[in-house]
Image 1 (cartoon, one colour):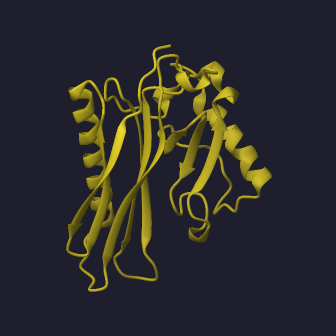
Image 2: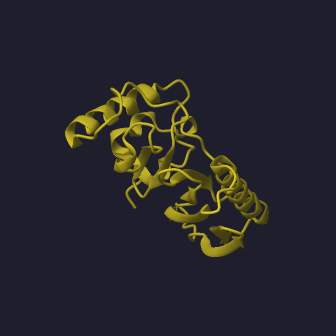
Amino acid sequence: MVFTPPAVIQPSRLTYPKTELWLPIVSGITDHAARNRINETIRRSASQLVAKQGPLSDPRAEMLGWFEVKTNQKSVLSLSLFNYAYTGGAHGLTLQLSLTLDQMTGRQYSLSQLFKPGSEYVKRLSAIIAQQITRRDVPVLQPFVSIRPDQDYYVADRSLVVYFQLYELTPYVYGFAYFPISVYDIQDIVNENGPLAPMIVND
């Protein structure tokens, strides 16, 4: 396996009235088209979060955006963008949007693309998450049945972390509900050409 250096991630601060956003700027990638594609995906995704929060018309309104890098190895970049906004009411709301990208091509992967075509990944992941909910005694707003086919996720080293937005599964006070799943527990259905495959290799 050829070693691929990790991408260079630099924070960039953008400020507007009532708004402060920290975005990752990716460099250090040989293919300039792939690098540009990745940065455009990040900018577009951050804009989506801003739009979802709605207008900051309340005099007390404010918005803060930041990011966390989850994986930056083996040509895979996985990160989460966060956006907190107070627009009035009892409390603010934090949104999270995660991106898993191929550093060689700039391609973004949805959850379904991590797995072999035709594999029952929704059923498989849902069963694992249901077990974790019981074992960890996670408080749920209603009985858990299944994840969405496009459920939010990110890759963290040798784990696939599936998560739920605030209010989606658990009460607001619980925060984001994260469910880490070892790649070794699902390796039989992993797409050999996707971003989880390199994480299975013990090197």
